[in-house]
Image (cartoon, rainbow, N blue to C red):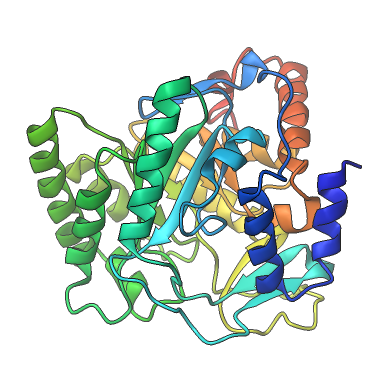
Length: 358
């Protein structure tokens, strides 16, 4: 076990949110792990025009304020998604709001989009962009944008985030699927989603015309969708010209076999118990989109087997976060080695060959 993984285990003795804060501080000080070798070529893929050296990404929520994307890139992630960021800083929900379900290898959070706001986020991405230009390296970095809890026009908040970060982020994720901002998931309904994505598309067109550069935009959805909603979301995403969908955010459902004493806390459940439901939802989106949208699989990924299950269900890449709580920062390297071995064992020459194989 590496010193970084030992330190990660020590953090488990602290309050979950305090532990996360210390982890961010350590990474900012340069104490994080560094991948020593190049990625296995079998893991490389281009997703919505984004060239990834490997298909394993860091999900939003870990680095809400874009403080450590370079450190997480060096740890081995092929792409790093920062946020969720809202136009104005907000404190989020009262603590405690983050809970470890250790027996279930899961997490419940009701953070409520706590973040420092767009301006510090943008400044950090601008510095990162300058550093990357000078050394021509590091992973793809995305921005996950959201709306302030008390916004009178939430759609305007998304447009504001897109415009402010245009040119600073490699891709954007429109997050309408957190269960911790009241009413946010209502944006997944057909009429509201058409309005949101229509205004996003208009803003994208203006920004592209002004600078001639375009960036992929993804929609992040919940795993708790009803029959018919998947097809409606796919049709709306296609009509608006978005590039892909991230499936999925946390769930408000509670599987009956959860063993941890904090399983009934309010909030979104992530980690191991989300794997099956989120992968099944991913397969539904793959069937509905007919390969015309890039899909990223999130929810419960903790091993190469989990990653391959997402890819076989239709994902071009995967994301993880909760598994790091229990697996430590060395987990990403173990997942990549396991995934590469499994792809070869099943006769696939690349990640692309395995997409939708299930």
